[in-house]
Length: 135
Image (cartoon, rainbow, N blue to C red; front, side, top):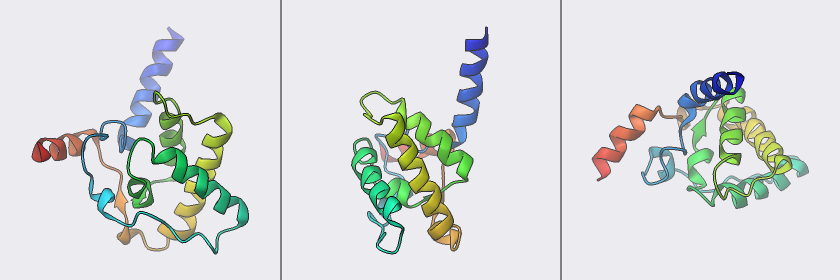
């Protein structure tokens, strides 16, 4: 019973951040934005984390997608955990923490200062509409 409740809770918490999970075969507005970040002014650990982020996250979707999406810290945490559990993600627990730390730092450092330049994550319904339009 606890497993069922936990599974339902995870699904409900993750639904607003279905940015990638249901969108692997659809082009999102985020995909058209910049494909890299100049992290030269970021602390050395964040520069290292950016490399891990680029390597791991680009396996399943464009790197532009998370670069151009804004989320809360809690949403980024759930998002990274969800991606870690995707088949063949190859993201270890330590890499997942490193990626989350980078995304949270980047959110606070770059995105929160000018949120109108970035896209909010899309709902499942919004992604389905885009998918239907692109078929």
